[in-house]
Length: 304
Image (cartoon, rainbow, N blue to C red; front, side, top):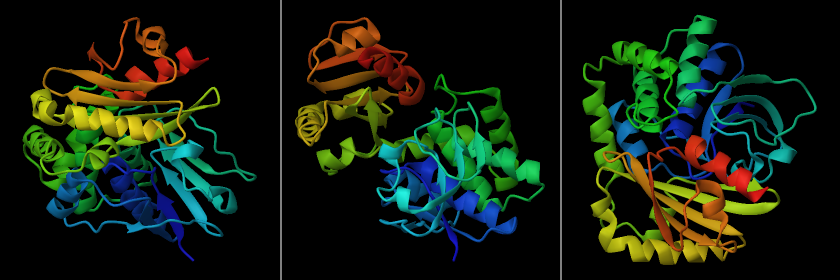
């Protein structure tokens, strides 16, 4: 039985491509693996899959009784609900170490870089395994997405080095143009239900025993969202009401390099504690681009 390689809930491009690539890499190293996902791919991810001829991973709702490899996360709130009934054999990630535990040793590649796919590029190199051209294209796109074409403060020299190498393998001559094409797709909001937009890139966190949801919607121009901002705020309130202490939605303008954060919380001063600015229902946060680096650590400190 093949092990399942699976990313976090509400999968983004990094999560999906990581599953595909790690399944390929580990299978070639002798551990049969199958890529899986905890949901359907986003429009951006569909664009990447189609451009490089990659098959979307199978959507899986249960991992009980199976071997599992987690990619792009190690926090239980983002993992399959029945992970405790599976055997975790590996973690490949670029976030903080979460709260998963194992009873046996496991393979772990967790690096402080801008994208899990940067880690995976180095795994292929370390094990001396050639990266297929189509997977190289997927890895390249995931890094461009997660680092916001190197605008994100999470970007490292390792990410830039990986992009240069992957572009050569994939036959991409202008990766910046490819990145902008991806973000144009990612920015498309017309006709998309507000709930789908809130959950397009969304994660739940346990912050000192409180369930906190943080979503992010990245667009080329924040003005694109003016007509639906009220709908997004109303939907965020519904999300908060589904058993969460707080829910936040980052509306990130990748050209202005900042985010407007929509706020729904039981603790009105939590944003001021975290960011040093008074806020009610929304606030503009200049230079805030990364949920992982700019937002989660500050909220975690504020909730303590």
